[in-house]
Length: 314
Image (cartoon, rainbow, N blue to C red; front, side):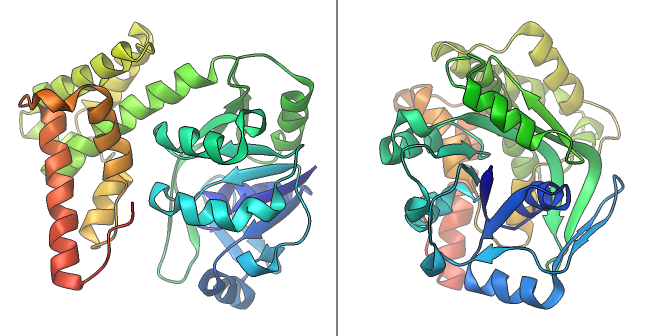
């Protein structure tokens, strides 16, 4: 199976690197700047689950695309999705499968309209990775799970082939028969986490120490309620797992979106929090924690544009 990983950053570089090291036919589609970095250093992963160095990973830049791929794994940020889709289009033919690992659901709608429903798989990952100043991929915990499945829940011949390609590569590859439900549950969790940690500029344990765990629970309840209106209420077991994680005393867990804000970078606030809020009927203008979180992120982006002259991507 020929696999194209769109991006070689914290997520794409980690899972794509593990796949490549396991002997899979993996090519990375990257921007020229990242290519120059990888040409110089190779792809390097530092992880408690095992370090990895690929001196010469297979790399393409957008104008160098030739031929189609069997599986395209999208790992770009949501605000880069349209540009990444333009770049990957030459690699997609009638048999190509597209596996996006973005958060939320708006990307699914966009990719479906762009490449057709037959191309689409569902998927998400659970891990904590980041790039350091030298472009090394740092794995910050011991979790590295990639979940995937057919949107209709069937175990098709093609999804079985994907499972075979992704398994045994040094991370947990899990085939789901309820991938859309699980994607919604992850969206709820990410929105609640990002909303609270960005508002408070703190890890979840710090919010507990501030005697504000009840606000975190209220945020989670609001996100779960919106998912329910869309036909995907999180199960009670899933909701309890989320609550336990988000209200654990002493926890250093925080959303990567908070780290984006602290370094002055662009965020996925509009895609993760703003889109969820809209689906819940934001037009009534009720005062809600999710609306406050969305306004906070919009104000940050406005200030970022004003002070640094950087354009906010759609």
